[in-house]
Length: 368
Image (cartoon, rainbow, N blue to C red; front, side):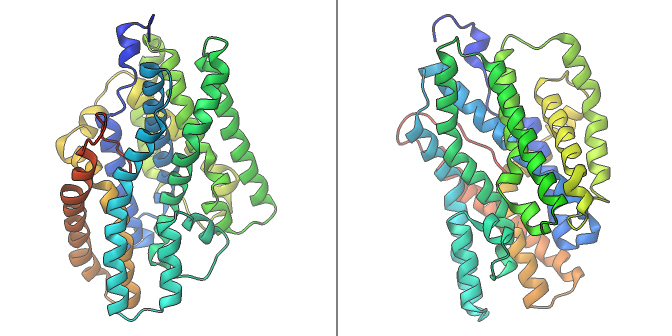
């Protein structure tokens, strides 16, 4: 776009090694919780962080398209989302279908779960406690993200075009999204006070909009300050990032899905801490946490975390619930198996689909 500085044309980078590393480490927390719930019951605190990161990165890509071409290339956007996410998920579901047929699992319950996963409505199936196999229940988060990916580019375009008539002011957009996050948190609080069940409070898209809105707001804020945020803010975020990460990690040992206080106020606090964490990693002054998160093993975890996430739950639960295998076996066999299939998935399925360029060049998108 004419009139933009070089730094503005380059905004945003779209990929952050620190975010990739953080996502990989958080995925380990989720794996620990699903191996044995009481090892790390508060892994739930990371789900809004995942949503916030994904929303930030996706909104950054949309802003980049808007800056470069004056519009969002919807076909390209949806194509790269499908290529990034769907082939690996479909491969997992095909293998899963063969396994459950061999194990003679109840077909009705299993096929319901497969359908809810394949068509991305698992979160609502769980929210309303529809009878189905629990082995694919982790796909609730994938469903929320896909619903967001489907609708957000359209809403983004409407908002940007509307404000574009007045100079495309990014900060009012960020403020609007913060308001959306507050509204979602207030709605969840109200449902909690009215006695809504934990499944509804945890899985509904409407009560999960906070992290998605805040991630997009952060992207708009960064775009508004494309020439750099103030040194004081960078210093403050840089100072705050390590203790915030420590608080979230330690809180993970006590937070609980089954605690109503989580839905009344704890999740809102964790969401604000997640915002500080992500903002610190992308806007703050570099500190000792950045090299840790950007180390090759940590970034590698972030690279394969999508495969780790989609494969671990059915592997762990089939071993525990159907095969009745003990914890030691699940750790010694299930964990290496999960890593093995995630690595294979990344190199043989995910990367080939991500790097195919049938049209314009497509930057890899990194999601959990």
